[in-house]
Length: 267
Image 1 (cartoon, rainbow, N blue to C red):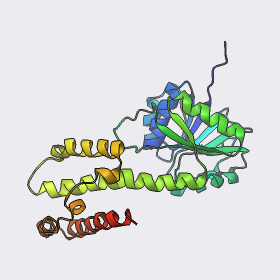
Image 2: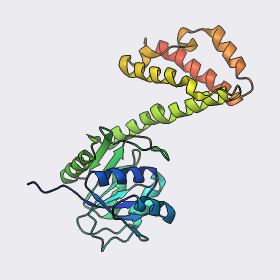
Image 3: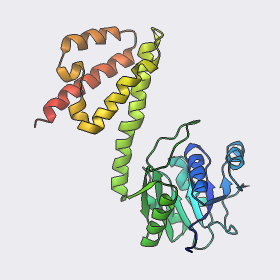
Image 4: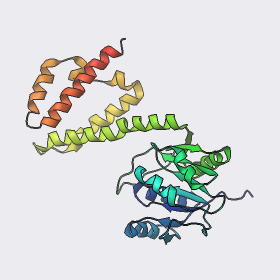
C-alpha cells in the first residue's frame, strides 16, 4: 500500500482565506497542527472547527514538528511575517497572494518556498468548494513545485503553474471580473433602493449575462443602450441618476468605454 500523502501544517493567519483553506486541507488528509494569528478570537474559532490544532503566540517555529507552513495574511503583512518567522529544517513555506512576488519568502532562508493562490473570492459566512477550483502555484525548485501540485490535488482543486508576471496579470483580470463586478451589483442595488426594489429581481438577468459571456465571449454578449449607441436612452438614464453624482459619472464613463471599445475592436 502506498504511503499516505499528508503534511503537518502550520497556518499563519486565520482570516477568510486561511480558514477555508485549513478546512479543505484537513478534509484532504492533512493536519492543521498549529495556528498563529494576532487575533486570538479568530484563531480559537478556527481551531474549534478542526480536529486537533494548537494555538501558538510566536512566529518562532524552530522546535515545531510541522513541515508545511502557509502564510495567509493580507498582502501588506506578508513581508513582516516572512522576516520574523523562524522555521524548522527542511520546511516548505508558501504565501497565498496573487499579487505578491514569490521572492519575498527568500528572507526566511528556506530552500523550499512558493506560492499557493486559490483563484477565488472569500467572504465571511460563505463556504467555498475547492472541487476543481484553479489554484495558482509557483515553486522555488522542482521539488517544491511537485509538492504543491500534490497538495492542491489532495483537496480536489486544479493546480495551475504560472510564473510571477502571468500570475500578477491574472490577479488584475480577477479584480475586473470579480471585485468590479460585485461593485457594479452594489451600484445597481443603490439605484433600486430608492424605490425599495430588491436586487434579487436582477438575478436571472445577471446569471444569463455571465452564462452568455463565457459561452460566446464578452464582446459578442454585450448588449444595452451603449452597445446600440442609443444616445437618447443614454441621456435619459443619465438624467435619472442626477440625484447621485458618483453613479451618474460612472454611468457616463462606462457607457463611453463600451462605445469606444466597438471601434477599437475594428482596428
